[in-house]
Image (cartoon, rainbow, N blue to C red):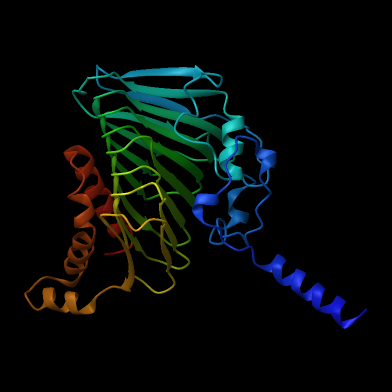
Length: 391
């Protein structure tokens, strides 16, 4: 073998070892599972994900062996339907952008569609509870939430139970609609959940999208926000608490492709225990046509104990100079002993002082949730997490 052949072989091996990241504007989407290669873990989209813990969701070996249970407690003005997979409305908010999402889209048998009629204001928050298929079982699902023109509502998607579950969730907002949605992942310790969420906003629509992840063995939630017409405004909030051994991954993409839209992203997470792992990826793309865009994204992580790890990667791509403002930031830090000392010096016991520090850390996110029932439930859930770790 010649030196040139040796060099060529080394170059090819290096190319195989690392799959370069592309602009999010170039990402591939398809409903066809076979159009996606089986991920190896070297791809940018999968490099933080523990593929071996996904129980075959990523390689097609996870056949559906069960089904989820969907229960709805909705406002009188809100309509809930169970529809076949050929319903023309499905897929309106977006197309799967990875193999698991495509697998979920091709595997579900029926979908749940929640509709807020046009020019209607819901009288109370609506709750849709999705219970996993059960320990050792696998299921695929699809949920679509529709807020028609000038509708206004709050919807909570509550994920509980055991098993392995992959789904696509769509949020379709008509012109002038105002929607608050809360996606809660409060799974049992054995659960694996991979979810791609598609957010599509019409002209002057406003969406507050909140993701809360507290339970499960491995959870990956990937929301993508797109704007159909100018004037859209999306606020994306997140709160997560990873315990020992848990993997919690949140991958966001905000695609500004039309003028005069705004996005504001704030995610906060706490981690404690050996091998607790949190991943946050925040991608914002401002395309050449998106003049007058306003956007900012921020992720903060609080590491409470040794052995926990947080990966945080904010990305901002700008293809036009005609924007109103844009920025991003990320911080990860350990528990602040100075804050603890300050509180103890004023007579507050150490255990209560630690709770106060963590509560203060999450306070900024909680105060942005304008649903008192949900906010109170989250505060109680955080207290339960703290008690479980002895804080």
